Length: 196
Image 1 (cartoon, helix red, strand yellow):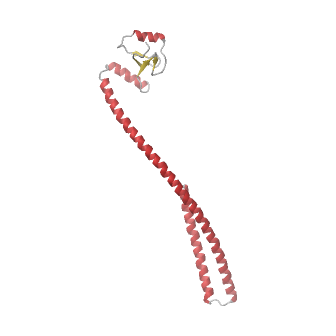
Image 2 (cartoon, helix red, strand yellow; image 1 turned 180 degrees about the horizontal axis):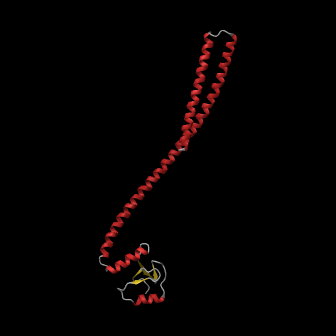
Image 3 (cartoon, one colour; image 1 turned 90 degrees about the vertical axis):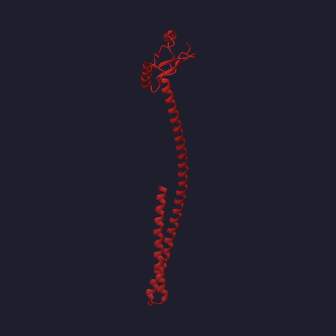
């Protein structure tokens, strides 16, 4: 935006400088025409007219130098605008690509979540209501995880190794008894890898 503004400012400045050069050129041409026409006969007026033409020629040269300087600045600004426009287009292309990949990933996640939700509903139908209620309550309290695997005497929910007395109680409990971690209170899922 700043480069475009600079280029636009230079364009206006160039237009004004070119208009100034045109005005001086027209006035000089008029004066030269008066001089060449012979309408001015007084030597003093002729001398003044020649001085004015010389002064206008110098002024025109100075203004043309200004035009050239402004044109160089404008060209530099245009190059900068072009370079930045390319960079913006490149970044926008990367953003579009990342957005497309993100949207695709969200779609996959949504499909997977729908599948898992359906599977959960099927499994939840075979779980006793009181156990499901406990699980849902723990899940809400524990950031989405209501049950954790007991793996080699360690609760995989809180990553704490269980005390020997706690392990003894779990070992002695019937296979269908709901056991919970003393540390995080999650339901412990016992497997052959539990280390009991």
